[in-house]
Amino acid sequence: MTRQLVAAEAVFVGDLEQGSAEERAWRSRSIAPSEIAAIMERDSEGQAREDLLRRKAVGAGRPPMTNPHHPGLGWEKQPDLARTFAAEHPEYEVVTTGYWVSTERPWQRCWPHRVLVPAGHNAASGPAPIVATLTFRTTPHPLDKKGWGPDGSEQIPLAIYDHHQWLLDTFRLAQGYIIAYSGHDDETRTYRIGCTPSTSFGCALLAGNCCVNSLRSAATTRRVCDHG
Image (cartoon, rainbow, N blue to C red; front, side, top):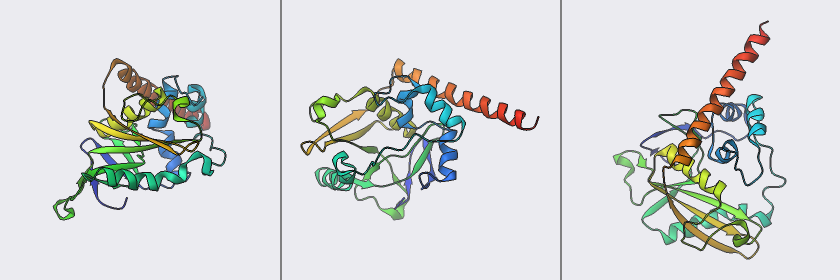
């Protein structure tokens, strides 16, 4: 984290190295935005709920993508996309950060791609308040074929919607931005999506809680077996 930040309903955990033992431990006992769609059994990327729970139970993460930084996937575009967004939204400062967890539900975590704070915040007055998130979604395919609606609309893929709502709820933010980029034709679309509590999201929180309880039960069983 490059500067001091504060959130109304979340606490900063740290800049954990992805794949480290500490980071895997956090993953095994918490639910991230990228996992909630699988837990709700509607992951458009194909991650199965039972596979996710099994991996968490043994302290493993999601299988790594094959060559995730291949230019066609657009991952290398994130810094440029962030700079363009900052130029188009001078009311914000775009900031990198690390792991955060909900103060109400410590098992609800996130690691946002970027967070937004008010431009011109005086660091001497205290940590900068996080007011929104900025998420990047890149694909080698045309955006229309991946379920993305027109630029500026609220039409986004269902699993991305679940991800976004989980992210906003962790911080208790009213809104966040998503930038979708297609490496197929170099097209970029920006979406401003608000936090919309619903029966569906209530089910997500319940499902997440049940998932964590299942993992705790499995861990307790393993300890009992290990000690005979």
